[in-house]
Image 1 (spheres, rainbow, N blue to C red):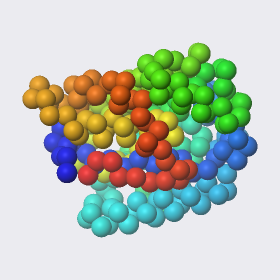
Image 2 (cartoon, one colour):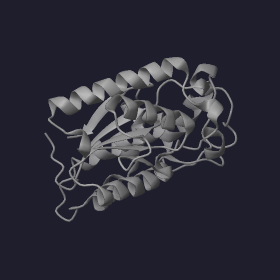
Image 3 (cartoon, rainbow, N blue to C red):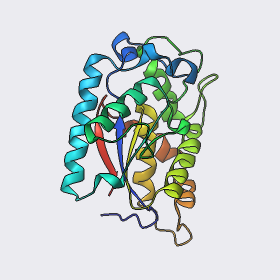
Length: 228
């Protein structure tokens, strides 16, 4: 099993619970729209978040990780904030306290004005483009590589601020697919000059890796361990 001595923390990822946009079949990817209260979790999504919190607590107990070592880092979108709040409640952590941190770099991938507030049936158009060229932006939106840039910034910030923690990253489908793709790839890097996270990310920032991010898709409310 690949080791991660270049990381100071353990990481889990959690896609937000089923949201009102999910129920309506809408793409809500801009920061302006995503932070509106009307786009938070649907009732089913609250249940999913609660179950994810209970599963996370079980995994913490199985790994003998005390709650004081837990950090929840989440996207500022309403659906992710709502999810993080439910999980924090399950863990009995104060959501406004220092163990819960909103990070704008964990926000949803912006798919561009040509897709915003339209049917989620249009997602495959973007993913087809990603497979062809993960460095190509949808018109007015973010490419896979653009998302890599800010996820690398988010990871660097978490690694700098925390040490020896179990970090739950609460974010969205595409960013978490891309983050898992990155972390799975950096574990395999063996070049001797790649002794830190930043250099490893640069090494795996290539077409044949980034174009495959859909292989790491998560369901709404799905929890996954990515770095142990």
